[in-house]
Length: 228
Image (cartoon, rainbow, N blue to C red; front, side, top):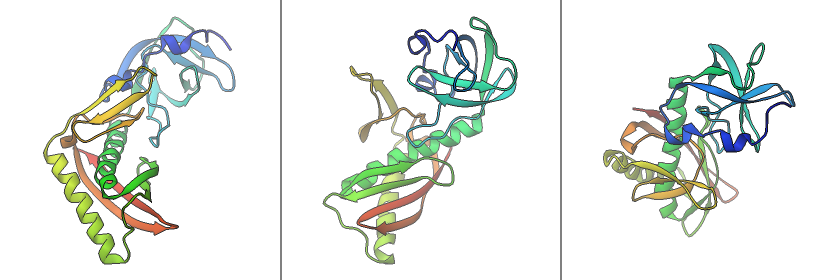
């Protein structure tokens, strides 16, 4: 392992500040050999898998790279020889993939804000394309029993979500005194979150609940959404 001293202090999570920052020229601040060879860069525009959101699709100097993270940094793993500490590299992410991930993650927050007031508490989630879902325990509400009840629940949730989309509520984020980043839909909900998000709810389109399942006293809503 080479050059890994104080990496966490030197790497900036730029993806927290700007979801739509898709490329950057930045300095290599660490090169590591184990468990796999990789580099850490100062301007961290790459979102690593976590919180239900997948990795970004990444290139380093035009070549494909995979992504990992540990307690010290987000690591990029390009093919071929690694640049040295102090060199500059061009890091880019696929804009379409980033927008899709941000839309699904943001729609997950928005739908959750519409479901929780109905008497449910979130206990699981995924924001991955093709497999996004929200999982709930009952917290004073009632599980829908039968297709008519499921349809009514979906209509209620989607009606609320569409109202909030029309209102163009801003998404914002702050890091609290304990170092926890909290994402807020203005006037609606605040949650701890390290993901990428749209600028306002109006950036969301095609929000749909694609499946409703009740099992073992839990409610599971599968959903989809796109970036407008």
